Picture 1 (cartoon, rainbow, N blue to C red):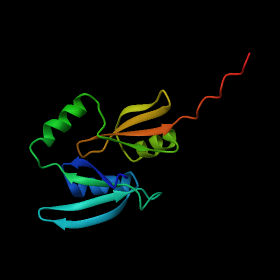
Picture 2: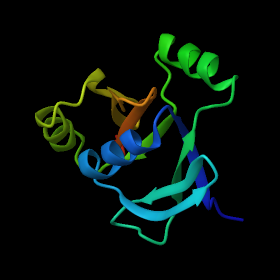
Picture 3: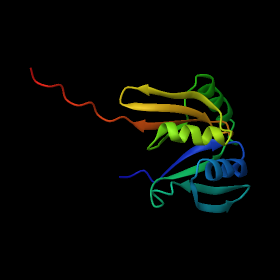
Length: 137
């Protein structure tokens, strides 16, 4: 079993498409009309056949309170892995992206949290190198 699609709820699919492609650098995988909305997925350019992120319309009445509660508690809606957190943080800040958490260590990872302008907090994660084993005495 593999994860095929995961999603984030967005208030405006066009705005989300702009942010997730132009700013974050994802590529459109599917953009199919689906009534009032679209089946709109993006993928990493490093893994174009990998897991798709659905920019899910947030029209359901439960979405607003759910997203507001996550944001109020500082909980990211999802997490993306990066190779160089500091470089990505600086690149995104230069593009005007707002961060709610600057890069910091957290056990085996370094992380930062950004506001996607579409109602979500998104966590960026860089795996830390495993510490070298302690020398035997």
